[in-house]
Image 1 (spheres, rainbow, N blue to C red):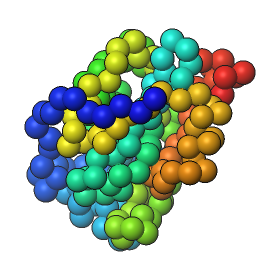
Image 2 (cartoon, rainbow, N blue to C red; image 1 turned 135 degrees about the horizontal axis):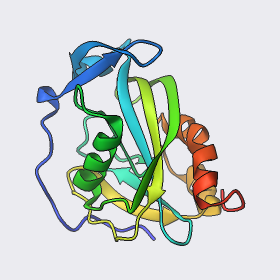
Image 3 (tube, one colour; image 1 turned 135 degrees about the vertical axis):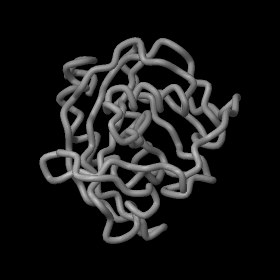
Length: 193
């Protein structure tokens, strides 16, 4: 059942954030300001995507806040973002899950990487990312930051399939979900996902 945010906290100022640029193998080659890295044609940069599950094996989704500069109001995985230059992706994933959703994973583990180039037709911005995938468990109810998250929902695989037919998802969601599925199935069981 979707829920709306209850608590607010300060958010990052997009113009002040630097991202880590990488080559095709994920080796750091420099930095770029966040918005400029997403302007067409996009610069390949390090990112992460998190998929958290409750004790019943349901995936926690978020609908991005309407005020987001990129992909506002669309559904996506539990949390996604970018490490600061030099910040380990695992640390960044745990940090942003807390900042966006007000929760800490009770378990978080690596589930591989995926490289993609997804233009966002609505904004004209480009997700040119080398994405580190993480799967884990959560035992707390989300307390989303209203400036980051519009609503949340725990869904089964069947409920996710139905939602994907009727709602708009982030451009990167199908790619990161497909890439994370082996780790998801190992975590919560192949019969669930």
